[in-house]
Amino acid sequence: MNAIVIAVATVAGIGILAGLLLAILSKVMAVPVDEKAQAIEDILPGANCGSCGFSGCSGYAAALSSGKTTETGLCNPGGSEVSAKIAEIMGLAAGEVVPMTAVVLCNGTTDAAERKMIYEGVESCKMAAQLFGGEKSCIYGCLGLGDCVQRCPYDAIKICGGVAVVDYELCRACGMCVATCPKKLIELIPKNKVSAAVLCKNHDKGVMTMKECKVGCIGCMKCVKACESAAVTVTGNVAHVDPALCTACGKCAEGCPKHVIEMLTFNGCAVE
Image (cartoon, rainbow, N blue to C red; front, side, top):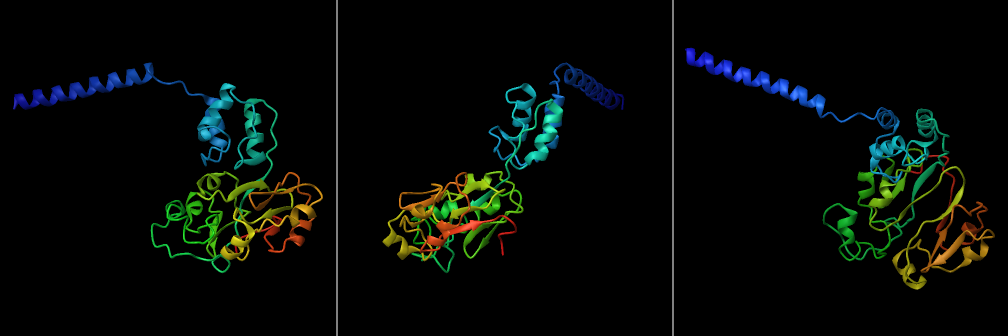
């Protein structure tokens, strides 16, 4: 009996000593908490999207606190409201955050785009793209398997008619969908102005494009000639609109024979 008591007491004593030692070491080896960085991180949206150029929200908060950057308006999801709060904490001027939204530059729905095969593999755009570019004849078009949907932390993307569509009201311009799309079909454009957008990325020549998709850009240059602000260019047989130059006159959309160009107003949900 005495042996059992001694064993229990020994184990208990070791446990107490170990606990005391760990408590002392936790104090001695404690990493100092950066209160400013913590305060900034607490007001950031927590998407950890990297759109600020740093390794997530904690990285941006640490960079601000340490003086590596004084730009308070780098968080797109947080917008001007978060920028103002950061400026208050840091004693800096608040940077203006231009509201942005993601736009999927493809309108090749299942009704418009031809299919060259039926894909029955893993439900992933990245995986499907590795098999002859996917099931659509247009190897540049949206595959509609939802990699961007899964990646979006704000539930702002849906698949409609085999094409990803952004809900502009929910989009916070974190850019995670942009990085995820294997076809590079998604771009961020300003949300505070009407802008034209070419909903196509097909680089094939016009004759081939018309065989692949009913609503594909054929690079005819009519939009370039119609634009008076030099906002439209054609490179690699496909047109593209620079939203910074676009005056929203709508002449490019009116002159497009394939009706590929749309005027985006961002005044409501794009998902039907």
